[in-house]
View 1 (cartoon, rainbow, N blue to C red):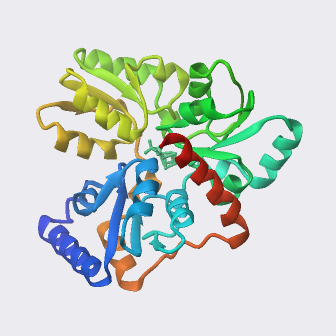
View 2: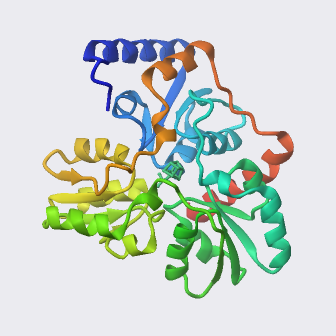
Amino acid sequence: MIRPEFDAKYKEHLQRKIKELKKSCGALLVAHNYQRDEIQEIADIVGDSYALARDVKLAPEKTIVFCGVKFMAESAAMLSPEKTILLPVEEAGCPLADMATADKLRKKREQYPEAAVVCYVNSTAAVKAESDICCTSSNAIQVVKSMKEDKIIFVPDKNLGRYVREHVPEKELILWDGYCVVHMRLTREEVITTKQLYPGAEFIAHPECRREVLEEATYVGSTAGMLKYVGESPSEEFIVGTEPGIIYRMKRNNPEKKFYIPTDQFICANMKLTTLGWVARSLEKQIYKIEVPENVVKKARRTLERMIEVVK
Ligand code: 13P
Ligand code: SF4
C-alpha cells in the first residue's frame, strides 16, 4: 500500500536507489511477510520469522537490512554475529515481545523449578537468555513435544500457548499473560460476518488469534504456513486471519484466487513503520545497527540454536 500522493514514479525512484545502494555495499534486503507491498517487491528474501532467521545465517552477504521488527533483527544478529544487521526504523518494536521481562520470567521459574521454559521468538533477547529453547509459530508444537520435561512455561503469547497445549496434551503448559495486540482485535463475530459475505471462502488464521477465532478456521499456521496452504488448497477464495501484508504474496503466487480481510483493524503499525525512504536512509547511513549485550547474547543465542537443531 502506498499513499495516493506517493506516485509510481517516486516509488520507482526510491526502489532504484535502494537497489543501487544495496549493490554498492553488498547488502541483502530481507522482509517479513507483513511488510508493505513496495518493500516486498524489491526484497531479496521475504518470509516468516523462522525462515528469515535461518536464511540470514546462511546468506553470504555481510550486511543485512532487516525490514521487520526489532526482535526479528535481534534474532538474526545473535545467530549471525559476523554480520551487520540494520533495522531501518529504530522504534519498530513488538508489543507482544515487551509483555515479558527477564525479571518476571526468573520469578516464574522459581515458582516452577521443575519446568522448562519455551519462549516464542516474539520476545526480547533478555527473555530468550532466561529460557531453555526458542520456537516460532511454524514449529512451536514440534519444539514443545521435543522437551524432556513434562511441565513447560510458555512465554509470552497465551494464544499460541493455548493452541500448542491443545496439540500436545501430554505436557502441562503454564501460560504467560501476553498477547499480540493486533491478532487479539479480531473477534469471532467479525469472522462469522465475513463468512456470510463470502460463503465460498475458507477462513485461515494465525495461532496468535483468540481461541474462538481459531475454532472457525480450516487451517491454523504461521505466515509461511498460510501462504503454502492457500497454494495447495482447492478453494478459490480465502478470508485471511492475519496481518494483511501477507496478501501481497498470496495474490502474486495465486493470481486466480481471491483474498479477503475479516477486519480493517488488522494492521500491525510497527511492521508498517518501515517505508522505502527509511530503507534507503538505512543503507546510506548504515543505521540502525542491532547490537545485543554480550552477556545476553551467549545464553539467548543458545535458545535459537537449540530450536534450529530440533526442527532440522
Ligand atoms: P510468523 O512467524 O508466522 O511470520 O509470525 C510473526 C508475527 O509477528 C506474527 O504476528
Ligand atoms: Fe508483534 Fe503482533 Fe505485530 Fe506480530 S503482528 S509483530 S506479534 S504486534
